[in-house]
Length: 331
Image 1: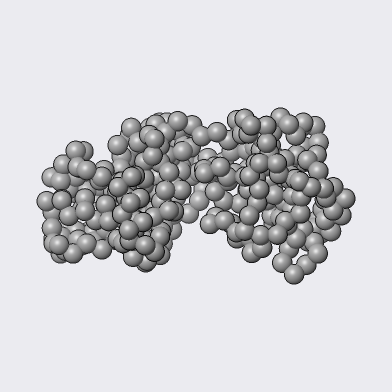
Image 2: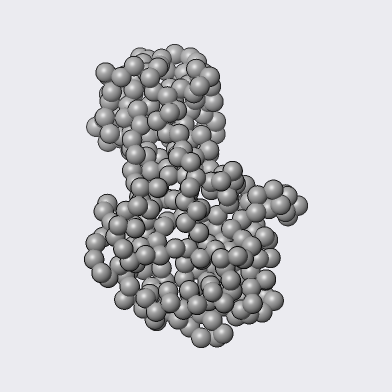
């Protein structure tokens, strides 16, 4: 079941609300001793999460298909960086990572059991069957597997939404009368909390094959007093690029970032070149973002406005510091 993004949590009796966990979507197939984990786009995941496989084997049920999210708690909060580290070709490295920070599989749907498909049942019935499955499997006390909470109360959903940050990536709202619609977006919506931050422009990259700006590189000052690279903004209109290029070429001056500097493409970036031009630290821009983790914006940010009234030295990491990870307590 896929989701489409909306701006507001839907209200009404026909919705079930669930936390949107910050992890990897994962289907778990079990046929007795055969376990297969599959990502949302159909890629095998079992080799990267042997700890999840080992925990599924311990469940009393022998044949089932579950839908859920693989997460990795670190220090009381979920770490998307640790999930990314698991995607490693060496099995020995994966085993070491799994021993240091075991993964947790958070289950939110039951699609089949004992060769009986539940795909055509409405969500309200599937949820009842899933909760029965969870009680039988004693998931509340099982190692590394948890039942994701669900509620039909809008007030509960808004309370979860207020906790979005490190653990929660937002809220999912699903139609109670909907069957499991694989690959469709008609029965479920996602709501993310968009935040803003004032960032210093520490450099820029030229567009590929052109002498115009492709992206502006963003930074924030840390407690060490240094400007650290934390992301970028792009997507400027063609009519704006020439003026921006002229403006920032006039400001070109090393070193730009004085702390962590831009390297080559990160795992969350689509930049194709590691080359960048430093600029004098005078320009502040306000951007919108949905997630900050591992010292940088997870996805590309969205330009909101220039901030000529803002002192660049006031653009600190305090704006984006993560909230304490409390959402795991929901489990």
